Length: 222
Image (cartoon, rainbow, N blue to C red):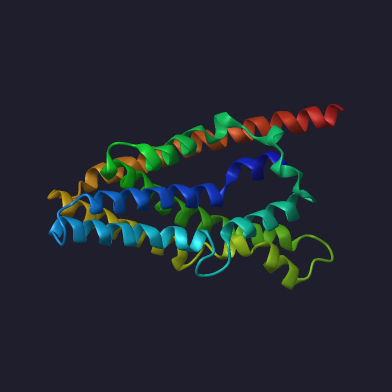
């Protein structure tokens, strides 16, 4: 479990990448002619992207990083899952590279598209796993509903309109950016980014599952 939670999510790092992307858009806007159409569109784009990190950092509600820590600690029995020895770079490689591109990548449209792909994936993942986590945790003897819901709040906070709302903001951010650049959004390219994100995420989970299986086998031998 420690390997899983160490490598599955890191809301604080994700929020930091979106903040960096927002700052890059503001910087680009400030370099435009004052009160120009391009500047206004870039400001609108930055404002849309900022809406994503607001929730993750707890500016408008619960801090998602703290909720994740509570969830992971509850499942692992302690906070030892935070130890670096549980980190698996080959599992987080793709997501790390994607987030680094948000922060420093040259093609801003590409950066916005991979951000869109991440938010769309998140919506699907949380919608799928929420009932599974609830069912799994419901099997623990003596665990009352209030405690269960508190531990699973990280999951519940991401279902419904949260991630789909993020996707909507990201879509508007891309549209505003394309308007600033005088280009039409390439929706086919966005579809390719979505496919790429799902494919690479699947590879990451395969690697994680294989590593966890080996760890369990070694533990049984000991």
